[in-house]
Image 1 (tube, rainbow, N blue to C red):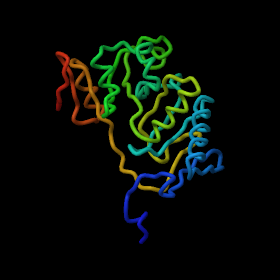
Image 2 (cartoon, one colour; image 1 turned 135 degrees about the vertical axis):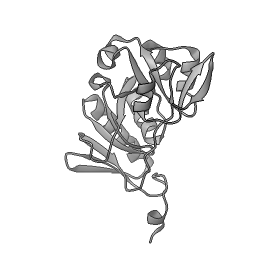
Image 3 (cartoon, rainbow, N blue to C red; image 1 turned 30 degrees about the vertical axis):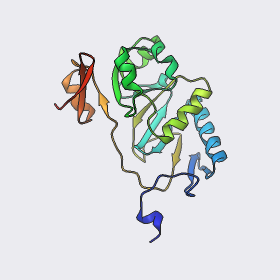
Image 4 (cartoon, rainbow, N blue to C red; image 1 turned 135 degrees about the horizontal axis):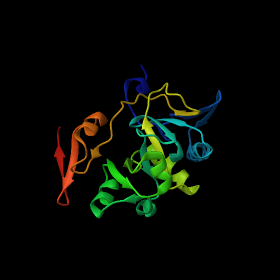
Length: 208
């Protein structure tokens, strides 16, 4: 048994594990710095062309799509940190939590009308947290996009394009912080434990 079969490692061009982008039966492979950048450029442009992109990330499979196609279960991912306050109504503690090293999901109030039409007055919000998501977000920001939506998915979730690799990944749920008073039944439905609240300008763990 080879070392790649016996050990779980992160995929990268230095260890020679290629990442593939599959679209309409055609495959594009990336195994060096230049081809990786090209792959994420292609994926970002496809997203802006209304394609649905399924990515095998370090957190598990995620299905990305434009925010205009969001629904109540979508997670809004803010890409441009400088413009977060243009789209969200938040206090300093929420802003700092959104960009902290844990990159938690926060349920926040929206103030941009386009996002309100798609998601309602509030939504679960996140900032890019792991390698694949960060690289995709970088290319989207280069193309002038400030936000994108995603949802947790499976390997067979319907999509237009797949970014995949042959390494085993154990799905993980992102940490979540919710304001005190956020409905308990919705926190339980999210299935993310432990859940957190914050009050009096500090965060504390809450277990329903």
